[in-house]
Image (cartoon, rainbow, N blue to C red; front, side, top):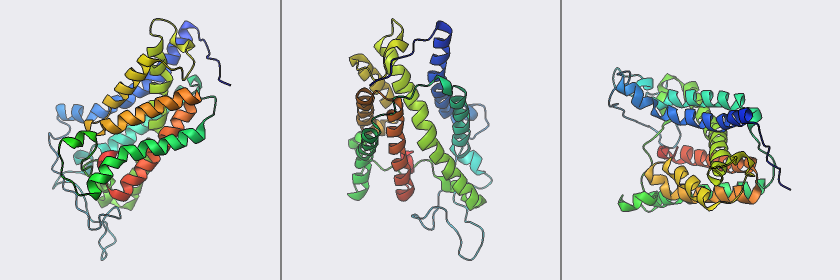
Length: 286
């Protein structure tokens, strides 16, 4: 049995719309902060960062004859928070977005809590398809070509938490912890609340009261618009994986009629993604 949609008053409808949209907008705005800081001169135009690992499969590098970790990133006279702004930006983004989600929490309708087994299986399938081209690229030792636009590319360049290992293992693991909190908790909530909870309904009834549209209602235009915008929110190299995942997530929403199932699907996929990235050091995926 599906839950009947709550029909709010105009004022409560506006607050509910804010609850579903504002955290996502703030989350996305954070991604432009490095460029903003660069434009005002607080960050250099280019960062001369040289990543060096004595053991590329085991995280931060340590000197066996010293209790201090070996510096792994940065250039002379350049601190990690300058050369790698994402290392502090992502934790701040995580905290700010989490506060917004908590502030608006009562506005979200996650019920019914059904379809979780289907959602978990979809999350596994979605991330396997997303990662498969890159895995084959590495396994077959391919060279890059036009096929990079379907995911066949090297993904080693990206968010590397070992850049802070020179300051001690505590900094490294704190960075990893925040990254997983962002990946598995904040991102699934903020994105599914927006993509499936709000936009899927909004596109289905833009001229009427979209809050009266039951969650998970199939609508051809919303399928196209929500999936397309979800894909465009990612890098071109991820378009293939994002298209498959976006269509699959739309299907889970329609099948389960449950926002919580969509969040769980996203969380399972992102948890597996994070574990894959940590084990392969393909930092470009996250």
